[in-house]
Image (cartoon, rainbow over all chains, first blue to last red; front, side, top):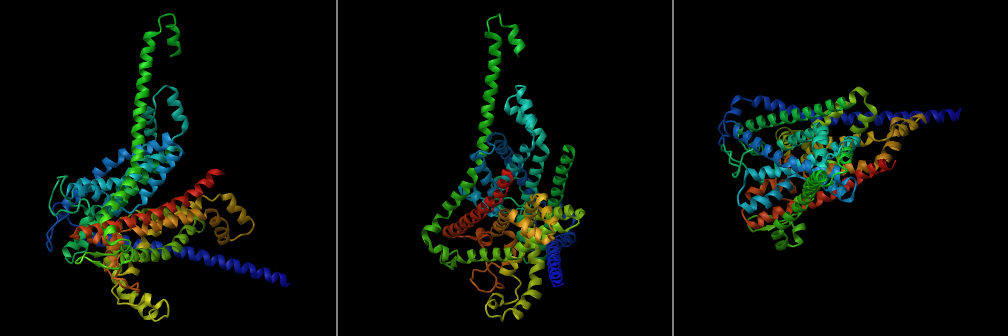
Length: 288
Length: 333
């Protein structure tokens, strides 16, 4: 009898410990989701209140008065586009090198290792790098420097997705094309890229999502500009930097504009992530 | 091709061969160009990282040469007399990142366990996707939420409560004694924790999913509870990758700029209390870079950037090595 009660006791204790642990895991999830919902809700509710049509038609105002964010939107658009245009080709080329030419060789693994570190490196450090390399040499802040700093953030994302997506392309495709006598560059450009395209596009979209809210590297490169400009050689406003400046200010109207900008950036980033996920998912379904 | 050479076998082989060899030469040439272009792009990645390290060392050389090793442990930050030391920002960076990890690691572990073992199957994908989506929200949004919503909340409720209840404790007390400003190390640490939870939990979830179902089901068949399976099968199998994920989150927390700049209070003062305003390396650079009015000031800020780069590089390298250990293990199977 006593053996039975000892066993019962043991079972009960294990079951209790299990239930306690699983409850804690569930609580942890609720805890994590709670904060994230709180933050999203804050951004959306404050942001919707601050949304108005002037946002897209007027320039950033001087302290204390009303205005819009038109020049900041334009600046963000220009610099993000520039960053994508610079970062994507280099990233795709480097990713191709990793997937098609190095395999698991030591050089390939080294580049992958440093690329992954670049992927998680603090963006502020990349901003300082471009400051030293460009701004310090030229002598003034410029939109070009801003785009370059953002391109350094785009680069590792594209390298990694290109590398991974090319590796997913079945080897038979390469062999079939090569056996027809097609040179390797044509095989890569016309067969492999076509097959890996949805994945690479996803990578570029994710990179765009990442740089559209990036603030720190722009502080030392593109700086800010209160006025409309399309001169790439001059300081340029961007949404994140304007948000930073206006949110820290004591003026009510500036803070409202900062919330509006934050709202637009949040919605844009969430949409981009959803779209890129949809592309990946559709591609997966088609391949299966 | 072979048919072609067959019919021309009797003729002098020159003409058709030359057309073919010319084409082969052209293909080989363009292949070589192609190979060199992509190889250059690959090496460019190495160059960027090396260039970043070197350029910051170069930009910070004034500070390193002027202050010597004392730069690392001096608490002075005096723009008027041009005396700069990095201890306060270094301390702030480490303390805020530590607070973030103390909160984020257990929570992320809980989330990963919930998403792989506990939650009903239909719930796993949407909740996992939601958490990954939230990892993509720009840090400046976290910063604004911190400044406008969380700082007042801390100042109103949490800080006074900590001050009254824990402030008198013998050892931990001094950490939680201070004015109810809302801004400070603790607030920054909590905001950082919220930021890195999605990162760490999605890495952990992914590595937990690599555990072969065979292993887990064997343990269940022997009568293990879910907790025992996680603790005795899943964790030992993925230990190095879990540590890698934690270091990945630590790297993020150390280098995060905007989220902490808003809530840290930008005070160059070393204080024991976590409720007092402080500073971190990234926040100092972001706040003061455009105001730096002397070369040595600017150089000190870039030198801070170099220190941050070195520390995050080490942390991320460890993370990467730990994560790749699991891959290799899987590869060897």
